[in-house]
Length: 562
RNA sequence: GGAGGAGUAGCUCAAUAGGUAGAGCAACGCCCUUUUAAGGCGUAGGUUCUGGGUUCGAGUCCCAGCUCCUUCACCA
Image 1 (cartoon, chains in turn purple, blue):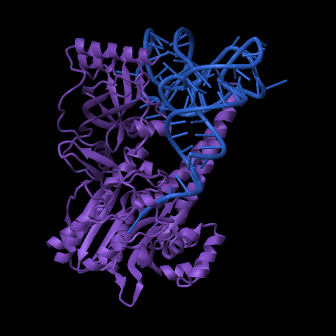
Image 2 (tube, helix red, strand yellow; image 1 turned 180 degrees about the vertical axis):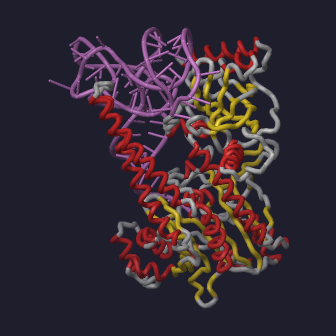
Image 3 (cartoon, chains in turn brown, yellow; image 1 turned 135 degrees about the vertical axis):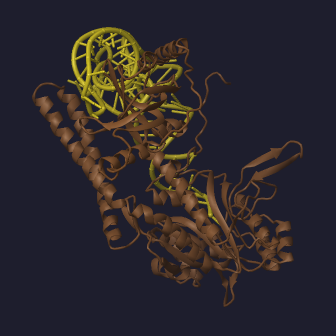
């Protein structure tokens, strides 16, 4: 079947070649983005250009992929989709050259073409390019996924992301948002005089985090190397060198489990600022994320409207299907099945719309609110700052320095505490009791010092480290320290290993890093921000795999490759 | 690694009790110059994820495996 479609398309491709046309096209200049054409026409039609010289209809030239095709014999309507929009084009036998019309009749869904012609609305009001000339830019040999439902199979959408992007505008829009959010963060940091730097992915000593690394090998150097689990120790070396404000959008690799919020390779923004501390990092985190969220908060209300309208449309489709069944035009069983699906989809839409509506109400009051799953996150600054010890006491009912009580609580929670160091037990209890409550943006401040080998201690309390983690929607979003710059203490904490931290996440001594500190690192604040998770939050996406273009999947087994 | 779910035409999905595997879209042929998921008539299209087993007969039941999803474990 697929072979037949492919053969049909190949035959058309050959026919195009026989006409002396290259079916794979060439450079095509002066292309106007489709949203721009639509906007131009809208402005013109609204009379904003009424005194302009431009004659109606206005000319346009654009290019895109054919995503809808209605061949009516001597006239063909098609929809062209480009990177950010979609519009109708009309191809008419009378309006095109003979060769162009011959080409038009050989077009298929999925082909990429260029079009030129006047823009004018149809009788029913759809803005359309009435083509005077078309150019084939690329012939597709394989069929596109279905035009209405698009591609929904999650595995195919991920493995063949190009199909997801070309058929699901929502998915394409999400990845564009990702790019814009990262641009926004970069701009914000540059405005603060930060330098974007690049540090090694291939490292002979891995550090800066507790995680299992991927290992690889360099052939001519005859040595094993690790893919970085964190850029931290390199960025701090730059502080020593006098680069006072540095950041890196750092792809890190951790050889650990995969789930909805963990991908083996992920993007961590790490930044370090000399003469700052973790309080400065809090301000930066708040500022950068809340201002990134702000433009999307404005769209929440309209999106709720759109979802409710879609749900109403599905209801209407159900009713017309019922009528068709009553009139005996449609198979009742098939209609019932289709209606069940429509109703389920409508119910889902309304549920989601209700959350958007709730967020929109907050936005109307001047707050920066976005939906995430079935809750609303309020990003309005300042964000809550809470002490680790206070949260532990509030949610676990134990004081942080009452170790026997903490251990008893751990046993109640089913944590095998007897082999764990005190600090590890405390953290287990914290994760089980306090973390699930952290839905709204919260800086959890001042961690047990033993857990934080790279963090400076509170001068008034050596058991407390000046560290915060930022939680939003129960996810750990950022992790920041007032950085430790005393080489003697640093060397000491790197050699300690806590019981219960896991054998394979050994702290590794990096002698050169300690040497760097001995040359003097200014006091500094540093932070890591889980960029993929920030994107998840701001795009209301439940799985990290949907915000990474090509997340890791197990390779498909090719038959006969053994 | 544990538990649960899914895998049917290129795509989106059906198949009631174990009894000839269907529909829409896409494709192919014909008609149609303002259509909107265009429409009409017709044609073709299947290793039901893979491999075993039970049975007169398996998409359906059993066993093993593969991939994906959810969840738990793991996870700075």
